[in-house]
Amino acid sequence: MAPTLNVTHIGTATAILEINGVNMLTDPFFSPAGTSFPVTDKFSLKVEDDPALRLDQLPVIDAVLLSHEDHVDNLDDLGRRLLDGRRVFTTVDGAKNLSPRPAVHGFEPWEEMEVVIAGKKFQVIGTPTKHVVGNECTGFILTGEGFGHGRDGLPNAIYFSGDTVYVEELKQMAERFHICAAIVNLGNAHAPTDMTDPSSPPYQITMDGKQAAQLFREIKADYLVPMHYESWHHFTQFGQELRQAFQEEGISDQGKDDLAARDLKHVASAQCVLSIPSSSPTSPTCP
Image 1 (cartoon, rainbow, N blue to C red):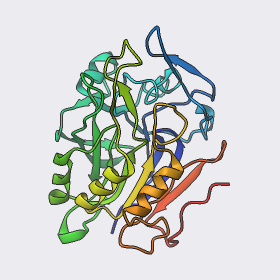
Image 2 (image 1 turned 180 degrees about the horizontal axis):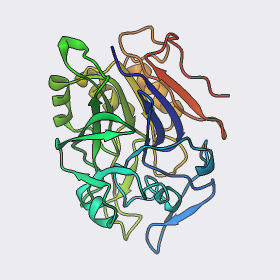
Image 3 (image 1 turned 90 degrees about the vertical axis):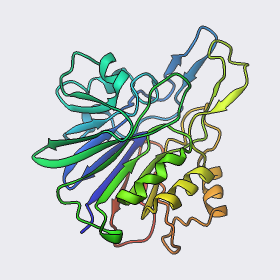
């Protein structure tokens, strides 16, 4: 039997992954629309949308999957409030920078760790990324108690990409795991080559739809759950463009094709909830 996964998208790369009744939060960001964040003396980033949930509206959060702690759109001051007293999985540098928090662990690529969270056993594996030059970032594979086995008898697992462009090494996970759901940060974000000069040539720092489709096929995932493609101007591929890219790649959001993407874009302040596996092939309802 596959794990039960409910995904509640809050905004950007922030989502609650309820896995077999355990709540894990990805990349906590809760600042309201219009908040500006200076990157250098010459330019800032500004978030355009409110989070779907405020901190005081969250359920009990049992653990945090933090792909990197040094970019504000993945961890803001409000999100930092959730780190104390919880299991936090992040990068090696991130664990050092967030100390002293004894429950924070930093992962090297493909490092494995067995933990008990809310009384249930999980295996957490760090995955390779390629993001901003000189900065650490990590993705995660989650498997463990109650996940069962899927394709070719491989253990069922859930993958959260973190911020990354396409990395060929990631296709190795198909040899070890049956990925039930791939939760992928997209947006085709770009950053200046020289962070002190916003006019310097930009380079890609997160995947676009075509790269996500390639990875999705290579890791043989059942579901593709896109996040991190709205609300910020350093993204270059937003919802409409992303849907077009998926259509061109033969990925349907209606579950009628071999490949199925599930759209988690929130509308205004409404949250979207996706259940996997689901009896309905349609995308989640966003009030």
